[in-house]
Amino acid sequence: MVVGVLSEMLTNTATNLKVTKQTEQASAESCRDMMGSKRAEANQTQNNLMVQNDRLSDGDIATVQMQRDVEETKVALVQAVYVHRIKHAILLRELRVSQREEVGDVDVVGGRLRQLSSDVVSGVAAVGLPGPSALLVPASASGQPWSVHFFSGNPGRSKTGRLSLFVTSLQMTGLTSGVSPAVVELLLAESAAGGLMSPLSSDLAAWLGVDADELLAVTSGPSAEQRAFCSRRVRWLACGREVRGRKRSTRLNAKSHQVLQRYTQRGTVLLDSAEDAGQLVSAEGVDGLGPVDPGANLRSSNPWLVSYAERKKRPQVELMLQLVRELFLCTADGQQQPQEVIDVGGGRGDLALALAWTFPELQVTLWELHAPSVEQGRTRAAELGLKNISFRCSSATSLGQELQASSRRPLLVALHACGGLSDLVLDSCKNLDLPFCICPCCYASLPELRPAELCPAEDFAVLARLAESDELAGETAEVAACAINSLRMQNLTSSGTTNNNDNNNTNTTTTTPWNIRVYKFPKTWSSRNFVLWGHQLTNNTSNNNSNNDNNNDNNNDNN
Image 1 (cartoon, one colour):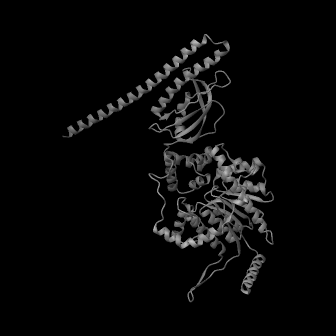
Image 2 (tube, helix red, strand yellow):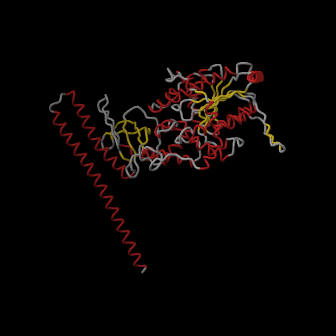
């Protein structure tokens, strides 16, 4: 019986090997047929050119020879590419063959391309050098392309005498439908690590159709959120939406309803009191910000990134400059004005560079954890010749400790401070009485930086999830975001510990007088469109405000 089973297993194995061999032979025959047809086309073209040679002048002979070499190169290219398709799953989708001014200099691909196949699959990119080039689309094992690369190198002839491009550099230029989430996750890791691919961050955001700020928030989040983000954006590349099947409207569950009702009044009051910030900035940005315009800080000429910088980033930076100027005007009466501005989480320095350029009398410090972004900002500042700006590559938690141990009292600004980073900045302002101008972002991110006394963790998780949803009906997301910001402002103005009296159940809280405003700018700039602005009031200002309030109350009583 055992012999029979073994015999049957050997028979099945032999059958499978035979089928595999037949499949390989069929694939090889298909490749040979295609290469044969290409060779026949090249021969026919060569014959046509030879017939035409009798009617050509001497000046046209070089052009004819070039065309003949191009046809020969196409045949060699097909051979090389189909070998790659069998061995390395590399598929040529588009080849651009062009003639240059110099005779015999032809843009082709081939030759030593095989040596770069592993680099292509891993997604390593380098800055493209000027010279002959072609467009190559690597593919998965199924033959579906997932990314587009731009190759550069030197033309020459291989050992067999065929024209070839000996590649010296390659650069990834885009992603296509069919890309694996694992590939996007790899590129996300390369974007966070920087190094050779430091310009990849802005390009990857454009390829995935997201804001650069959102991409930066994802790279700083946990690995589980990064994997989920990669899966959603791959699905978006494939079918234009992040969700499977039919898109359904978002609905609130019972718990979300309860939490939202608990904080609705708080959020609605703040939303109604928010000042329109769109009027503070010109609609078109006029001439922009000159040499410190966000578009001038790009390391890529990607049209999508240029448009993003002009339509979204520029007006936000202009608004922050206006609000910083307003802070200095409000603190000019009897208060010591800050001599330093710290841009917390400032990335590559779009806001910090604009502050240093606009306020040359101030010392500006960019405080950022991502080292490649800091280096890009430092390089740009050197190009502009700015002497009043410095750069610190460090975590935001060390900022509060450093300020606590020193006598520095700067103005803290943050444009799109992710989640708990906004709370960390406000906590420093509360402890040290510092003025601030903060645009919160990504309410659910970095929960470990959020103060525990803000509100119960379960309630905050629900509010953050609602604030991050762009698919809720009406103003639900805005109300949730304003509820969180209202809790932040309450925590800021509350100094000291609340004392509970068990006899009469009354609470006593010591408060510090603050002048606080909330601004709201158009969603066309960003969906995270609230700015928290404030400074501590002096005793004189506080007394004047109290006297004015008392006079108003007396007048109302008399009336």
